[in-house]
Image 1 (cartoon, each protein chain N blue to C red):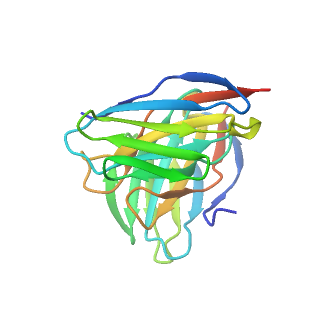
Image 2: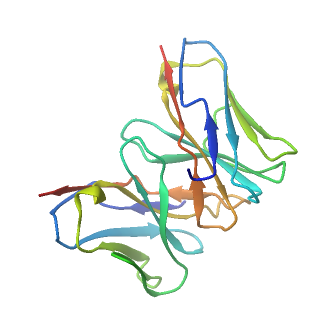
Image 3: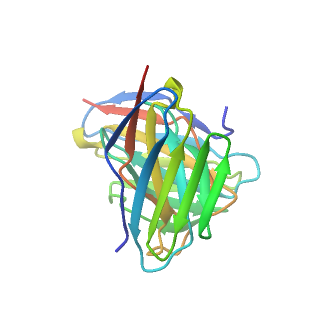
Length: 111
Length: 112
């Protein structure tokens, strides 16, 4: 157990639907990062939150949004889902700039 | 922009030594990190080089040359369990935050 908890582990949904992925960071970590990993692709940075505030945005689609709550857990909302959104979505937390702790990921399948 | 290049695949046999190279292009630099990911699993942090030179952690070592914009991960005494993807990463300086951008990964296959 890395200390970063992601739920659900698997999600199957239809095109056009909306889903919410949840992440609880490691105790004491204020930064939460979301990454998308498609088949045979590397890790694509989506968004970072730090202590409840959005800190940086990467290649995040307008259909996607995220937030971090006062208890530091974070949610990634994906809407108007398309087949191409099928991927592994990872959450990571960190106390340093380089050493992330990743959760086990949510495997999203859009059918 | 920023980019990282690493080989897509490397193969080796048990007990051997393998080196995975990473070259990067960034407008600034805050160090090079390495992560391991087993198939379908979570990436795990292996090593970080903020300064030039070699960092050793057990069977794994990582090297950085900032003047050459180059680093490598060295895996010694390879074991079957080392079969995984390995990613180098640098801090994304185009962002105000501390996000890492990752290379596309090198798949290491270790055979007996």
